Image (cartoon, rainbow, N blue to C red; front, side):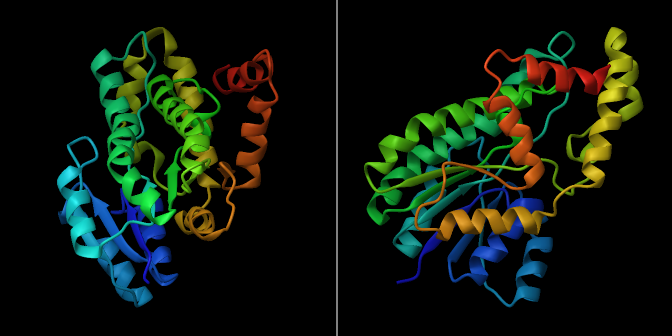
Length: 275
């Protein structure tokens, strides 16, 4: 019996690394991405690792029912769903558009909702794993990340609520909480830095300080492979934790929030980012 893993957002970064590592560990890995024209890097990584992947198109903001049905028809089962697809967004609510908030929620939250809904019956049938890559931003709200953190908070709330019910039917639920991962931060969120600072108006100085601090954190970030190792452990451990941070820094950062009953410790920390 070959276990089947369905992983979203695999064209680069964490998703790419997770797909390759899952295949190396013996999973029949269905690696999905929105645009198959971006699959070259994934195919090259799989070839270098000596593994085969089933690469398919899947836009999590659209109806994924045909893709899920095709995977089940072709492979007969799904043992693991890794909700990894997502997109960053930077902005503050006064100056951002409601439409940007909606788009950020569609990618990072509703995409997770609709795919999880479709795959849950298959996971119940296999006693499978439901793993979702969130962020430390799913625990700690951060300046200029209102839309993104709102979406990640929503994902964490959904999964925390679902976990005991899923467990009662044999499905183990985990959320993976990375901090900074070695990607190009400004390019990843589609940000023209000087234009964004100029457009920030009364928040310009705070935005410049936030970006400077964030880019410094990305310069000492984890690699996608390091995060993928944590995902694979959640896939294979007999009893994975619900909430899993991917580094000591992430453990300390989220731990501050989880012990911060009145919110003052987090406000003091993140306020220093923009002061």
